[in-house]
Image (cartoon, rainbow, N blue to C red):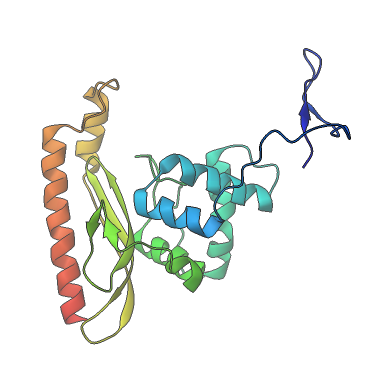
Length: 214
């Protein structure tokens, strides 16, 4: 570990060497990445998702500076691994999904999930917004006003393991809300909450149908 040392005003910080008389004041090591990733997926910690994504992208390309650049670096290997997938329109602006401007299709989502492999799939939670999903369903949810998503794997009544991606949105309603909402108010409008309740019901009904009938 190379300690930081103050630089002169106007100059960039420069690495230095700790003197032999230095005393360690504190040392903190984070949980392993597997533990952090599992927690991020379960609790939807957006900031942690962005930081993990940036760190991973910079291991591949140290020149990465922005979240869109980072997202592009991390999706490129999956795109190369799945050349038969139509990647037209893919636009990811970050790693948390907290943007109404990102675009991805269900087919593209499944290609990314499949390329992640069993080790990553095992990290997916069996919960959606704190509520337990049906037995055999492991997936990551995504929720914004006028947007609901759930993607992962499920085990059917016949014992088959299948991948799925559920997306439902109302772009016109979202755009109208963005034009009129007060950014100082964090609460979702009542009509958007009612819309999300209907979307959650549709999601639950489809999961039940897929598990029983596929």
